[in-house]
Length: 195
Ligand SMILES: Nc1nc2c(ncn2[C@@H]2O[C@H](COP(=O)(O)OP(=O)(O)O)[C@@H](O)[C@H]2O)c(=O)[nH]1
Ligand SMILES: [Mg+2]
Image 1 (spheres, rainbow, N blue to C red):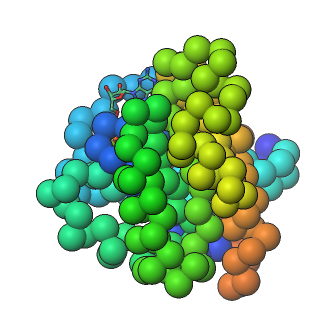
Image 2: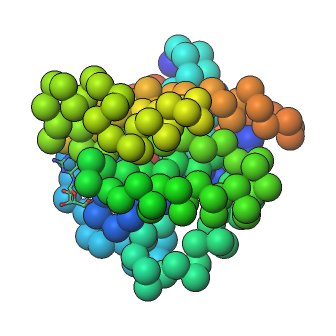
C-alpha cells in the first residue's frame, strides 16, 4: 500500500540541559529502540515521519540542540521561527533551568511557538513519583501554565509515539501554509530518514 506523506513547512526544536536525554528520545522515535548517543555537538537535524492516523502521515523537521553552555550562543538561531519547542527535563533538572528556557522561547518567538514540556527517563521514577504532580516544582509550574506535558522514557518507549503524533497533529491543524503532498511512501519502506 502507498501512503502519502504531507509536508508543511515546520520547525520542531528540542531544548534542555545537557544529558537530560534529548538525543536518545529522538533516536528512540526514529529506530524504536534505546540507542546510546554521542554527545551532540552544536545541533543535529532529523526529518521524521509522524503517523497521524491510518491514512495520514506528516513529515516533521526536528532540530536537536546540545544543551551545553558552550553552544548557548547558537540557541536563538534554532529557537527563532520554531513552531514547536520541546523543553526536556528529568527529575533532577533545576527548576530555574526550565523557567530560563520558557522565558527564552517566549522572548524569541513572541509567544508564537507552542511549548511542550517533556519529562524524560520516567523509567527511573517509582510509581508515586510517576503519577503525582506535586512531586516536583517543575510539574506544578507546568500544571499552572496548562501546557502540554508528556512523560517519556526512551528506555521503555513510553510516551514517545504519542508525543510526536500530537506534535504532527498540531502542525497539521495549525500551520496555514500550503499543504502539499510531496511524496509517497511504500508501507514496507516506512522509516525516518536523516537528511
Ligand atoms: N534510564 C534512562 N536513561 C536514559 C534515557 N534517555 C537517555 N538516557 C541516558 O541519559 C544519558 C544522556 O542522554 P542523551 O540523549 O545523550 O542526552 P542529551 O544531552 O540531552 O542529548 C545517556 O547515558 C542515555 O543513555 C531514558 O529514558 N532512561
Ligand atoms: Mg544530545
